[in-house]
Image (cartoon, helix red, strand yellow):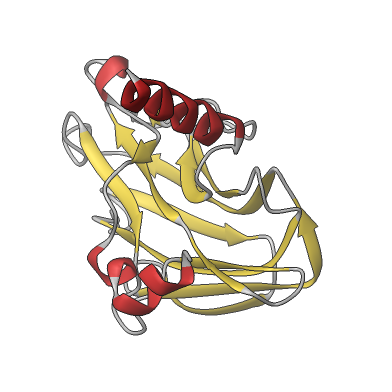
Length: 189
């Protein structure tokens, strides 16, 4: 019985502590939906945001988007990336860093948008998932807070042409393997 009470208390405390910070991809600027249909001839804008409920502000982020669609161009689709800072380095599908001249307050920090104008109805299949992930070069999936401390964050997911919104989550609960290094584990304590 004591073990059950302790487990329930730990669960309650973890709920109070807030959600794991993560870099997400959303269909709306409020960060409430992470799935969208891909209609032909109508622009669709997705929002890349740092969800940092327990971090007051960030000055930078480093990540990549795994399974990124890329920009095939006309006649398939025109994909336009627009970032909220001119201080960017890298490619979004390999390793991307964005920095801000002044701290950006949370709980949601807009990093940028990606606009899709699709002409080929079969270009993106049903239930196509993109995930924010560790970079291919440095192995980082992080934000940098206002005190310039690097903080590992979780992975967000986005689904195009989601057939069942119940199975199109915004957050990937698995830990990226690079973030589970001994250094990352020691940083927790």
